[in-house]
Image (cartoon, rainbow, N blue to C red):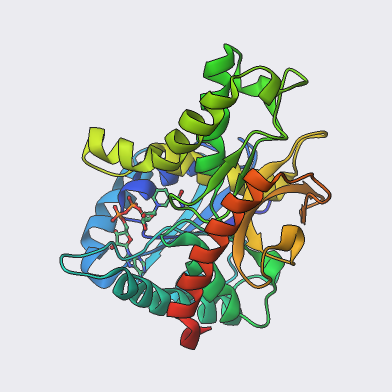
Length: 325
Ligand code: NAI
């Protein structure tokens, strides 16, 4: 039997985890040969709900599930963790300003960053999903000085998948026919889904769709998709978010396919004139587990304006919680 990998999930009693955890025990991350040990983190008030989730995980009788540990202590949860899904976050409460939301989450992610720094595997891959995901990831990273930027990413895969799916539908092709999709920036409505480099069956996407559709429909549909799902379902995207978390972690661990890239929130190195030290979604390739920002793409003025808008929002978020960096 292969050695089990340690997978930690925070917010384990929440709605994304209610999909994510069952996908993990079904082998959807690393396949049917890879046993897993789950480390589930929740706040103490939610531990009784988590007990129910654990019972259901046990009731799946998965041969891959080696052990489950539950805790409300990040240092216990992240001990020896190889893969960490930081899903748990505080939602906006009544009367809460955006700044308060940033602040309360910043505190959570600074504590978790410190715990990761102390006890996680030195090769840990930490994927931040809890919102505001990019800035939460930046805080966690900055509080883990013995780990490096290569250990952290924020989730833009849901936005990426939404963009791929919408383009595939428009062109009447399968999602696998779409390559080189890019979503730039923040996981928010300032994100910029960009078709300038995307290919459909090897052809330039922008030669196959009307420019007006790209500018007036595609961009805003992807940007607003989260809100549209909430409006329809009364709850935020959960199964698709869990799916995206699995997709992003799998790509990060097992590489991008030859000739393609994915969008991932990573620490900016100044590429494309995006300020360093922001967690920003770039097109990336992953080779032997190493993430590299795709360099040298031509960026039109139209694109640069939108990329800068999202950069400005991320700078504001960072400035609001600078004392915790
Ligand atoms: P949820 O509210 O159903 O679950 C969140 C869970 O996190 C709750 O059980 C809560 O008790 C727990 N939690 C809160 N603080 C915690 C802490 N300090 N330590 C451990 N657990 C903690 O929310 P849901 O729907 O599962 O979403 C989770 C997060 O993911 C939200 O912030 C949401 O906005 C974000 N999200 C991000 C997406 C992305 O594409 N990046 C897409 C969809 C959601």
